Structure formats: structure tokens, C-alpha cells
Amino acid sequence: SRLAPFPWDAEESKRHEERLRNLRALVARARKHGVGVYLYLNEPRTRPLEFFESRPQLKGIDAANPWESGTATLCTSVPEVQGYLTGAVAHICRAVPDLAGFFTITASEALTNCWSHGAGAKCPRCGKRSPAEVIAELNTIYHAGIRQAGGRSRLIVWDWGWADDWAEGIIHRLPGDTWLMSASEW
Image 1 (spheres, rainbow, N blue to C red):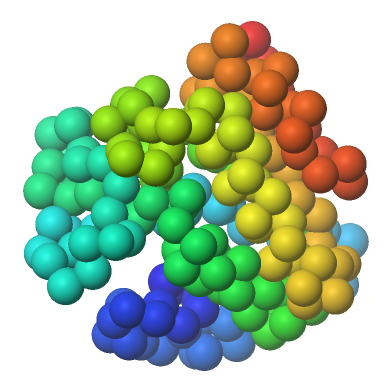
Image 2 (cartoon, helix red, strand yellow):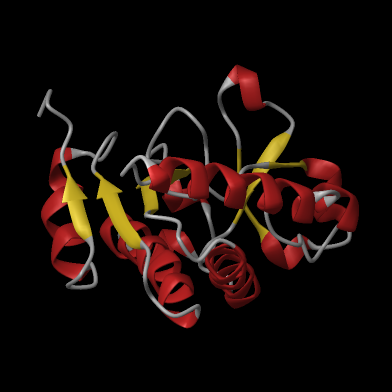
């Protein structure tokens, strides 16, 4: 929402074009030195519960952790949310065509999808799907955005935070040209 238009609240993405110009300049400077810039994707971020009062169809699960209390996920099983994420990644890739890529964390400290903290069963949509399906689909959505923009950026999928019994199911569902990065602790 800071680098692409946020369709449900224009204030959320205010000055995103300026940020993209700055990112383009950073990528150009890094490229002169043989360095690629990768953006960290840990999205979509939670929204205040008030956000969902006029958009209940977008709501996933409520945050249970104290630092995100009073918020809920944008459910990534909702086509409207999926379209936003694909479009946002494509927008960034078009605006910064020399971006080396993105790396994702889909089960971190931040609640970003209904299964990211293991509580997806509480969501009326994600609860009918496995964590592997939801998390692989989210990475596939990012991948689709990259491809929609012309496909030069790489997608690195990091397994940080995945439960052991999710990993194989996620990995087998990822697009073939994504890269898997595994946490050294595993």
C-alpha cells in the first residue's frame, strides 16, 4: 500500500509515486555497482477492525497478538484481495523494471494471511483450505504480478515460520521458476 495504489483507501497509498521514483533511483545506483535490489514482501498487512465495517467481505481473522490487537487480515482467499495484490506487484515491477526481485515471508511475526499464525481455521474461507494451499496461492499471486508486468524480477519464497507439516505441500504448489530460500535453523 506504500508503493502501489490501495483501492479501498487512497490516503493509504498517498505519495506512492514519489516512493517509486526513489526506489527506481536506488535500483539504478545499486545496479551501477553490480548489486540487485530485492523488496521484502510480507503482505497484506492487517487493517484496523473499523476498515472492515464497510467491507466485511474482505475480512479474514482477527489478530490475536498484542502488537496487532484491534486489527484483522485482508483475507487472501478473496478474489478482490488477490486482484489487489497481483496488481500492486505488477505496478511496482512496471515502475521499477530493473528491480532484481522480491522475497516473501508468509508466516512471520506479522499477521499477513489467515494461516500465517496457524489460525486459518477461524476464517470462513481459509478454514476450508489447508495452510499449504493458502500460502502457496499467496506466493503464486505475487508471481502472477511479476509476470503480468513482463517478468524480469525474481521471486524468492522464504520458508521462515512455516510449520514443518506445511512445507512440502507449499513447495510442491509453487510456480516452477520461483526460488526457495530455507531458514538455516531448519
